[in-house]
Structure formats: C-alpha cells, structure tokens
Image (cartoon, rainbow, N blue to C red; front, side, top):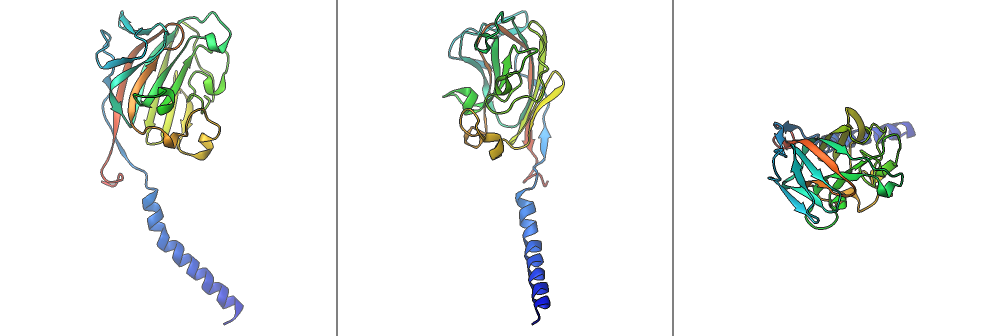
Length: 238
C-alpha cells in the first residue's frame, strides 16, 4: 500500500472513532434545564421565624428590619437549599475607620453546613463598607477569599444595597445594585480554585443553609426572598 493511501486510511479511522465518541461526549456534558419556582420570603419582617442563630445571639427585628450588631456568629435558614436565586437588601452602619479589619462587615452564606466555618463549608458573598475603595477577594460582593468583584458599586454607609445571587449547580452569578460583579460558570474549575482561602469548591457542600454573618458593627437586612430551581426530567431532556 502506498504511503498516501496509508495516511488516508489512518485519517478515515480517526474520523470514525471521533464520530462514534461524539454522542457519548455530548451526553456527558449535556446542560441540565431547570424549573424556576416562585419567590418566597425568607424573612417575615416581624420575628426570627424560619431562622436559627448560630453562636452569638445578637440578632433582632425592629421596624421590619433584621438587624445584627456585629458581635459574632451567624444566622442560618432552617431549611437547606441547593440551586436557587436569593435576593435581599442590606444597609451598613458607618465604619468610622480605615483599617479593613475595623470596617463594618457581614456576609451572605450559601450552602453552608452546621459545623465548621460557614464561609468555607459552603461559601460567602462578602459585605463590607468599602465604598470608593477596593479590597479584591475581601471586597464587597466578592466570593470571599476566592473571586474579586469586577467593579466596585457599593453604596456609602447608611444607604441600601441590593444583592441578587444565583447559584445553580456550580454556576454562580452575583449582582450588586443591578450590576453583574461576579460570573463564575464552574466553581470547580482548577483556575478558580488556585490560591483560594479555604478548601477547593469541589470539596465544599453542594447543598446547605442560607446564612447572614454577624461580624463588625451594625448591618440591617430587609426584603429577603428566595426561589428554588429544580432540574427538569432526566438531565433536562424531558
């Protein structure tokens, strides 16, 4: 057989193998479709029904606001969640400080566990009084210790900010005051996990509690609501 015919035969065999493999590859990487439920309130504006304080007990409700004085611990939802969209408003008290460790500080926990640091058993979206400044992976809107917001749109202290956080599978999107500041298609991507604080995301919980952190100074919350995403059929094919 001539060298030319040998090369053509080899190429034909390779193409056949690729064609056979394609259906399996496509099936493995098929994107799951989700049903989006209705938004339901997580906070009733009257009391802590539906929530459990973890650690320090400094949470209170006044005039329809959920308030922490920043004395430690966190407040968690009674239910666990996996795939969802979470919306809430938060307002930070003035820090009267320039040191990052003394600034008004809180956070929103996602998929956190009962035991261990909720920022790292699940993940935390940072809340910190950094209007006009930037603190990278510790800045307001950051996926704490891992991904910095692409822009600082935090409002000054005493003004309301709005979070719209969507977490479906390993895809995380964070909107702050209407701006997409974080979009991570795959939290398990090794590039995302390089040099992060805490364990890699593929070792963290895939289902857990929604939480609010009590860290430094007063932070107020309101209009907390969630809608759950449910997979449709088998791999999204029904």
